[in-house]
Image (cartoon, rainbow, N blue to C red; front, side, top):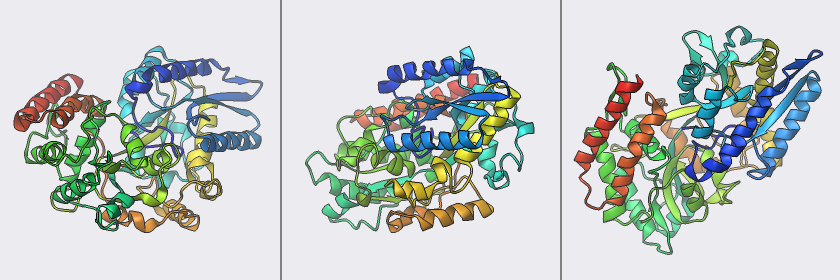
Length: 464
């Protein structure tokens, strides 16, 4: 899955509820790729995932201002913004790749590069990327550069990374007699706290989870990482399912108990991305897992949640210390049809907007504070070294949130395990397993795990 880009951009994968609307927006972007690449020394580049005014007027205004600033400093470059939300929609994305109608620079999740390369729609930008064109290049974390590289060939530039943790409602914790400074770290503690929160009544649920839109499988994979396991064993040829074991059983038993024994989850299941954030912002949900961007990009600005009610801790595990977390990120890929002039111009814009501390919508913390956006979340960084130190100094200087509310998450320092092989297809295959656990009171969990592993093995046999 994806993290937010430019504060909100990207959100998560395509959601069925928005597929039709997004299809119109996304395919409309195809026209941008027909914009003349250059004329009389000028160059035009189209780029998608620009924040829409309807979704977030503040970030839209910031984007427009940044484009104007960039174009003034680079009068021969014209930025053609493609406004779309969500940023990636699987049917749209696949259709554009097949037709070769993606924008000149297009947004992807880290897991999307193989699909892009299979479609033959990425330009080789290796010779254009260096410490002169991207001054922070040497400090970009290796895992992020790996996500835009095949062999030794670079096809794009990463823009962020993420790991997941436990987001919880501090206000509901207090109302339920729980310590808001002590989030649960084990599944047993999750159960205790979720039951206490659910007893508040008034439609309040203790725990929430996904089971649709590829999101259920995505969460299950992160739970496996936290227990020290993995969803897919890539050491085998072809790769094989690796969750039909004690770890997988523990996760599904915990979720089934929360749903049917404790009645700490909603009777309405089959939820995809977006629903839990809305419930949480409305004060109707105590806990769920996500990356920090859910807070500052969705729950607070879009769903109007109260930033002072929110805390974050590590992923639940059996021991109380997560072994790791599913991690990923986002990038911009350069289209096969790009000219050399467009590649150079695109790198210059992404460096300005996404890879330079103190500027752009990603790292302009001074502007974010002035615009009333929450600043101060310490999360997995795109950078190491001197650049990371610079980012941290700016983030601390302009912090507006109570950073102690997120200390448990920061202190856990969960390592990023990446996403499984053929991640989106695996997640989709695992959604029915999550749905069954959350909707069938008498489900045979061992049999369900075995069937799901067989289905994933069949998928991997033909996708490897």
